[in-house]
Length: 180
Image (cartoon, rainbow, N blue to C red; front, side):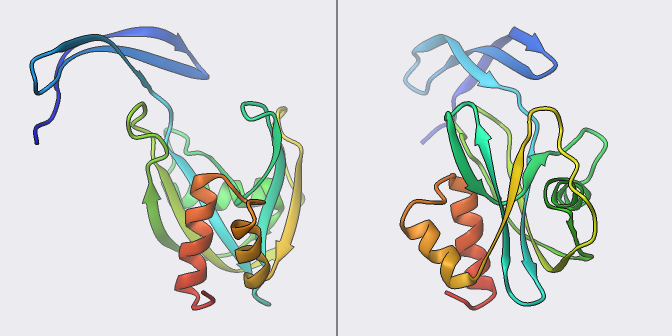
C-alpha cells in the first residue's frame, strides 16, 4: 500500500467561513486526478459533560445542513489562538451554562478523512454544574437536555443521537465511566 503523491494545489474557494482547496494528485497506479477537493476547516472540540449526580448534558439544536433538529454533545470550533481543552470549556459554558475544572482528553475523531483534515477533539468533563447563562451566536438556538447513562445509551441505540462524533463520544464516555 502506498500514499498518494501531492503534485499541486490552488485555492478553489476562500471565504472566512469556508475554504476549499483543489489538489492535483498522482495515485499509486500512476493515474493523475486534477480536481481532488479538500475542505480546510478548523478543528472542532466536543465535550461530554457529566453532572455530580451522573447526568449527561446534551444540546438540541437545528442544523441547517441536515435540515433537522439534532441532539449532540456541546461542540464548536477551536479558534486559532486556543488550546483544545480551553475551547471545550468555553463552548460548554457558552452553549449550556455549565462549567467544571475536571476535564480529561477522551479521543480524537476524524469526521471525514477523505475530504477534510479537520479533527474533533473530545473531552470528558465531570462534576459540571450550572453556573452561567448561555451565550449563543446569531445562528444558534440551543436547548439543554439532561439524561442518565441508561437514557443516553437508549437514545444512541434508537437513533435519537446520530451524529457520528456524539455517538462515539457517548459510547466511549459510558465505557470510561463504567456505565456500559
